[in-house]
Image (cartoon, rainbow, N blue to C red; front, top):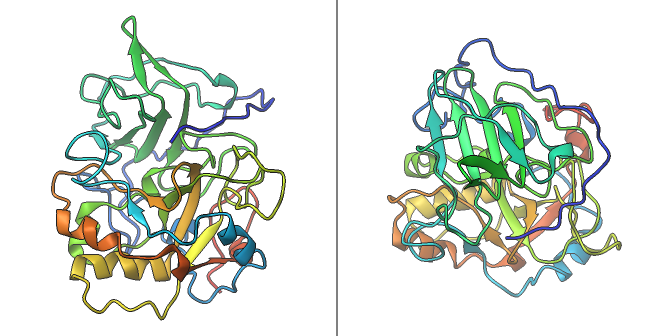
Length: 323
């Protein structure tokens, strides 16, 4: 999913508040496997229940430009992509892991700090991939999230297209106009389906997905866009789409029902340019092939865009108003 990154004129580094100790997962939020870290607090936008929100005024227009006749495509698992276990891998490191300097192609919008990258870093598609080569690293000591795009080693040094860092216990957003490892300027990790949560039958967050033609606009809490259209009739980065409540789960397995339920409660988040209605999950050899095939039966036409503006507490925060 290649994207066009429009580099802004931001001239300062993003100060990312870090936890002084490992934060325990927020109540009812499943931690990232291998850590005690929640993928952001319970009252964060990623975990917001959108079932009661109104349909967005531009829902029909956006959907008309998003190939509504297709079915969803799980962009992970054993049936598609770079090798038998496709998806975006998550690397978990301890607090003593060495950190290295990274040279960024888009340094003005990247967090220029040291990143815990090394021989153990898993890269999407592998180091020789021609794809996006995302790297996602969680530091268990500080519950800090490091993400890079187009990650590679050149002449013994780490290079990436862009990079971003978050405290997983904070609601703070990136400066408006800054990209991240995703075109929307959002973190990737909280939008990935993870096997441990699907297996447990509880997915507690929105799911990241892509479409091919987007507008040059973004909606809170997205911070960046990389579209090709000026018209507001095309979907912007950060747009959220909810599966209709009446979509039947009859005949689906319990694993598929967990994902479908999340699509109804939390929805999908437009986070990058790519193939229409491809949604993402972690790279994990345990994904059942049967589940991947089931998830291909969900039609794009069963979704509507929702208006999430009422959730906003602050323009620069991902916290939501739960009242």
